Length: 420
RNA sequence: GGGGGAGUGUCCCGAGUGGCAAAGGGGGCGGACUGUAAAUCCGCUGGCUUAGCCUUCGUAGGUUCGAGUCCUACCUCCCCCA
Image (cartoon, rainbow, N blue to C red; front, side, top):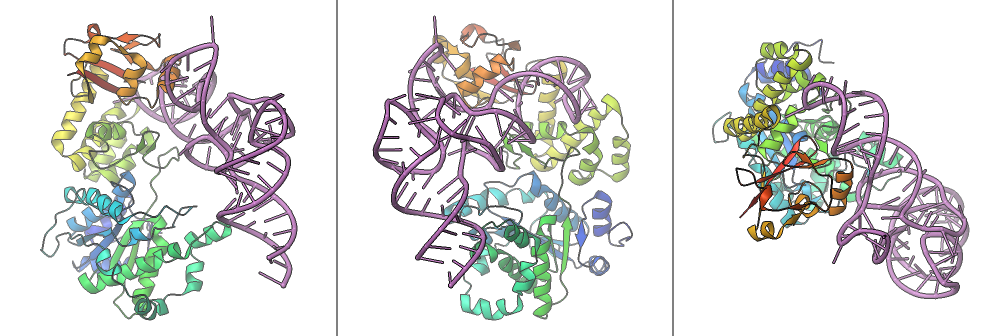
């Protein structure tokens, strides 16, 4: 739908060229608004996990480009909506979170944003309100009269998120059903408070966002806009960032910069160009050059992707250090001391540490049973030697010059064990 | 309120008739091949002090040498009737 339209505003032009746009409620009018330089737009983030993950990165980048294009980004914390839980795209009701959990999650989530946009009091400075500010003190009857009277149940029942649940005969509680009402109200409230006129999000949010747009119109507010990004999958169709180890978290405490760098380094060939456009700030002509690299040369493009993406999130220094660790580990086969390290009491080394326990201790495998299986499959190595005997003992003699033992799980996951 | 059906390995789907650590997928992980890619092929995919032991089939009891499988009660969900 967007190919035919050529936005005049920097903001939309950039988003379009970089592949951020899936749907827009009114492309021309939004472009007009952005061109006038007064576009204020928001993305909502629920506090359902201790950190945001890579799936949230697309919308964060949208906020970044918004600010760069002269707009004002609002990163809305869903402290209030997290009390309810968004049923979109889910088959089952999510467990209700406690207030304490939500607060803890919120604390983990908010710190990411300052890396992607500038916060402050100025006209295009980003702000970060929390919808608990207005949702928590809502009066039920008042809400029903003021807002509920403008929301159509017929309309909501027709929404995909609801229709799918009903069609599959899966429970949809009244609580969850209200989520979209609250999100619609958020949009209107942000317009009242800050003059926000656009809401952005993933394509799964389209229905919820449109509810807000329509509510705004019925309440006689100014025209509101919906702008969604496509669901990002890998070329092989998998959802981004889903690995057995868990989600690709944006918080360094949950996923080290090194592992984050590795995630990007392992991008599929056919995704490199698309990901460079979405997840880095590199100029487009540079990206087109990089994506024409073929064969093994595309590895260079992947390194640049990893450097840029990691640099954005964790800083250039962390990115460089991750790149260096990877270079030594993979290209030289040398022992890089900056690999993730686990300390083990020296006494255990003196006594001799069983391989099985050692790998569990390093966090590379989940149980001794798994360690055993991996040994049978040839997947574990100590100091680059394949472990053949599950009864093997790691003692002080295994410590190399650097005073550490290198444990490897597969080709790519390495941990250093250090006695202390 | 009456009648019928369903809940299986804590990733998901899903066989399962008294001998079951439980078929088969998907997903994931590992190995081979490569370029730290994809595709392909192979292996693994409850826990432990692993010739063995322990814990799993909605929950709690019961029958039996032995129960995912049979019986009873309960919980949850779905369908039909009211």
